[in-house]
Amino acid sequence: MAEDLVLDTAIRDWVLIPLSVVMVLIGVLRYFVSKLMRSDQVPDLKIVKEGQVIIRARNLRAAANFIPAKSFRARKHYYSNEENGLLHVPKGQAQNPQAQMFSDPNMAMDMMKKNLSMIIPQTLTFAWVNFFFSGFVAAKIPFPLTQRFRAMLQNGIDLSTVDVSYVSSRSWYFLNLFGLRGLFSLILGEDNATDDTQRMMQMGGFGFDPTRSLGAEKDSLDIVQHDWALPKFEQRAESVLKKLVQK
Image (cartoon, rainbow, N blue to C red; front, side):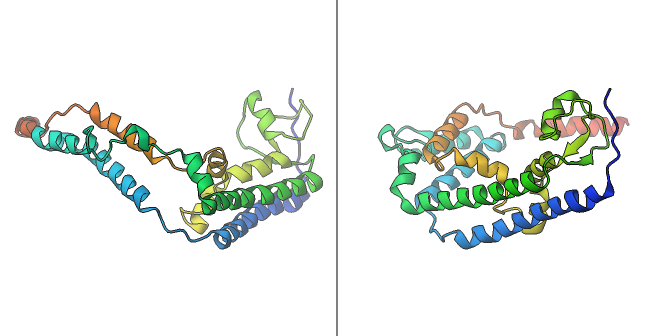
C-alpha cells in the first residue's frame, strides 16, 4: 500500500518555488537572447506567393457550395489545371528542402542558433537541478493517478511504496519545461521563441517544403464535390418559418 508523506514547508520554499521561478526567468532570458541572435531575413517572394495561393485555395474549398457550379469549375480549373494551374508543380521543378537549407548559409546558421539557444540553457538547467535538488519529493497532485504515471512524475525516486500523486523535483523540472507554454504566451505574446515542444519537433526537419503543400492542396481541391446551397435556401427558410409558426 502506498505511503502518505508529510512534505516539509522548507521543500516548498527552497525547492519548489525557486525551481519554478528559475524556469520562468530562464525562459524569458532565452526569448530575448533568441531575439538578439536572430538575423533579419528578407522573405522569399516565391514562398510568400505560394503560401497565399494555398490560403486562397483553402478558402475556395471552404466556400465551394456558396458559389454557382460554373464559377466553382472555373476557379478549380484556374488553380489545378495541368498546364498553368497555380497549384500544379511540374515534376522537374520540385525542390528538396534539405538541399535548399544547405545552399543557403544564413538558413543553416539561423537553425543552428535556434537549436543552441534551446540545448545549452536546458542542459545547464538540468545539470543544476540534478546536482542540487535530486531526490526531493517536491509536490503532491491533489487527485489520484494510476501506476502508469509513476515513471513520469517520480523520476529520480526509486521508492515503489510512495503514492503516484507525489512529484519529484526532477519531474517537476520537466513539467515546467513543457508546461509553461501558456504562461510564456501571456508574458511574451503568442509568437515567442520559448516553445520547447515545437522547437524539438523542428529540430528533425529541414525547412518548409512548398511543393508538397501545393500538391496536397491540389489533391484536396480535386476531390471536392460541389453542391450549391443557395437554390435550396428558400425551401430551408420556409421549413424553419413553418416550425416557428407551429410553436
